[in-house]
Length: 210
Image (cartoon, rainbow, N blue to C red; front, side, top):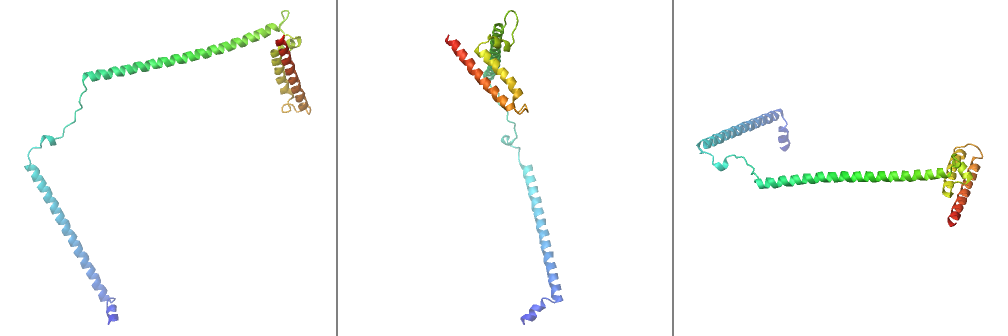
């Protein structure tokens, strides 16, 4: 029956028979591999021998198959002279460009120096004129004395007042002075500067009309 047939495959005898059959199959596969490797070696040896025999029987190598170096063609002397002339011209032009750039930089520096000198001369001349106008009877007056004596014009007097305002503002400003009346003093000082500015401008306008 089928049950007895299936159970016969699980007996120790059946297992031993299956193991021996697997070993025989593995041995046959190894032998076949060894045979194939031996045949491949023989074919490779035969191919190498045939190639060596063909090379020995072959004649000399044709010139077209011989290795040869590629030689660069020389340019004619006229082309070399033209290239040298162009290179020399480029170098001369580059040197001229560098010289021109240096001259431009020097001119710019000279112009800046002249502008600085002219501005310093104008400031010194204005200061000398104000100092000469503020001096009387051989004695040099301070800015406050000249302002009180009326020797300063409207613009100069306004500059003196603004300078004095800045000095006093640093002393009475609430951020600098902890006095409780510092804010009120700062307010009065600002109002005084505004009034002085208005008066000086009016006086300068009236003097210009006259």
